[in-house]
Image (cartoon, rainbow, N blue to C red):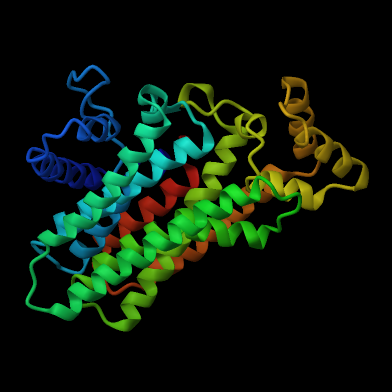
Length: 340
């Protein structure tokens, strides 16, 4: 494996999910939902057709797990849509909180229509994510209750993680353990839940659920840590210029590791730079040089490698067909090596 790309099978899931979700929105004519269609990548801000959708990584993982367990559940698409809408609601609000003006190479909802509209757009998408579960048909009331309970608990975890992320910006000292707890909630919870949902819909054994849960948790850690790495050592052509998270004063994994590793003099300089109202290009370069001095990139890569190898062992242990193990391993590889 050399190219860090999502497996082709994910494209098939994305297409069926898009068709199902667009049909769901066909019944929603209120002008409010135009912002949803824009954010989901179906139209541009003028209403012209567009193809700028996300990867639908979370629902695709869920559908893959379900299929690997020989599932053909008719409820898979409404649950997948619920997961994708929930994820996108959190992104709409995240853009407002971080004051990010662009996502997927397009202006964000709040940037075009204002913060108030962005908040309402996110809230209404969250409500639709919950409503999507009304379409689930089952004779097993316990399964439906379990499904809703898991989705609601995940919602709470993600919001708790978002709050911690905001709170961290005000705190001077944050441990790496604190940070890992935050990303486990903000980013990892929904990925982990997506994996679990795929197995719940197929009535998996407890051992299978535990294994899939660990894989989902590890995927979540890898996804966010890699995001943080790209926020420091990214690429302009993918919308992640070098040092972008330094300029934003984000207390991401590499920056927290730098705080932890630096000597007293460097610590003082780092604190002085991050206490400024605005970080200059010169200050950014000073931080980058200190990261090089303390081998921060190598440390982050080693953590990703550990997570990758741990997850690979979990995948090998699964009682599913080798073809599905191969797809999960390709996904594992993608999370470690992706460039955007």
